[in-house]
Image: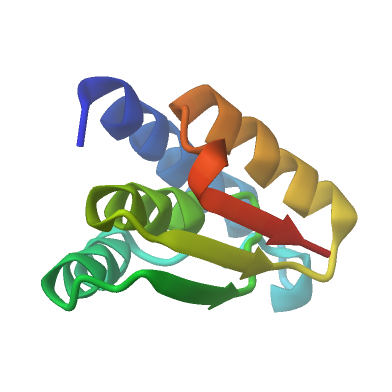
Length: 108
């Protein structure tokens, strides 16, 4: 994982924590994974050399970036599904910023 992606993930994690902090209803939150959990999923993708990965719940793309980086390393592809178009758009921007759009199919 390169420094640019690491910095983006750190920024998204801190944003997610602060964004969620004042949202009493969990449905209003971003509900991003904790970094350790996202990293574990990425390790599992790499360890199993997964080529086709499905993520349910894209949100703003925090975990999507972890998974996309992992499938990029395995030569695979990620499909990520989100019910909120605005959040999927946020994820698309974050994937573009990280240069990982080519390995991800975002669906709403």
